[in-house]
Structures are given as structure tokens and as C-alpha cells.
Image (tube, rainbow, N blue to C red; front, top):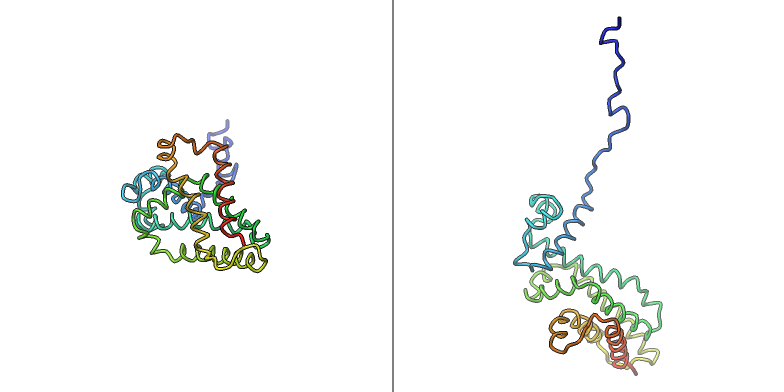
Length: 225
């Protein structure tokens, strides 16, 4: 008679398949926090945003968020840097230096129009930062450096256009930047009030196409020699 100790023993689960080790991914954690922080700051503004709410969304703790970002204000600064960085990075992939000056300007204007139209969060955050008198942009050398790079690129395009005789002389690249951004930004930031007051559906495809063409022509005519 076989004693119980002689009975075959089932192999432990650990011998059937190796355990999957849980590896911490700091970059993914930071990115998740940033994405949820964007939602919170867009919806509540800087003053009304709560770190508790951000932590709850991603099922983590306030302590973890403070570990990565130090404070709510620093998290907000990094949200600004991310959103500005996203648009500047996308602009770098337009390869404007490879295009003729007029075509480069047209592509930049169309990209700016489309980006603002599709990225309402960016428009909202910039509007919020203006309420705070750019207090947090002042703290970020990264944002200033990124935007100076944009002006350098725009200045190069304008200079090439002048040399080729297609753009007039004496143009300030910052003025061109403001001309482009002002229209593209305003129609998104004020879409509700403009829509209600003037009974226009700004998100309508035909309206957007008309405005997209209009701002391209306006900028090119301003630059024209």
C-alpha cells in the first residue's frame, strides 16, 4: 500500500510557466500623468484643478504624482511644455526648408489652421495661461527656446522669398507668426460666442475650408512683393 507521501505531487505553478515580472516604466507613468493632467487643467483651469482627481483617473496616489513632478504648479508647467512641444515637433516634420517660399508659407498656415482646429486642449491651455499673465511660461526656458526656433525657421523662409523676389522686403517674422496664429487661434477659442452671436457653425466642413483658404491667401498677399 502506497503511503500518502508516495503519491505524485503536482508541479507548482511556478514550474509550469515563468512568472512575469512587473517592471516599472517611469516614462510611461509620467506620460499617463501628463495626459490626465491636460484633461484636468483644461476642464478646471489651474486654480480649480485637483491633483487628487488626476491621481484617481490613473489609479495612482498624489504621492506618486508629487514624486514625478514636485507640485501641481510644476505639473502645469510641464503640461504647457508638452503641448507647445507637440506643435513645434510637428512643424519640424513639415520640411519647410525643402519647399519654395510661397509653398512653405502655405503649408505652415494650413498646418497651423488644422492643428488648432483639432487640438482644442492646446487653445484652452494657452487661454488659461494668458489669464495668469504668462506667469508659468516665464518659468520655462524650454518653451521660449522652442518658439525662438520657430521664428528662426520662419525668418529663413521670408528671407529666401525676398531674395527670390516673391516676398517684399522689411517683413518681421514675428508679425507673420501673429497674423497666422491670431485667426487660427481665435476661431477656435471663440467658436461658441461667435457661433451664437453670428449664427455660424464654425466646425462645419465648408466653413472651415473657406476660412482655411482665406487665411492662406491673406498671409501670402501680405508677403507678396
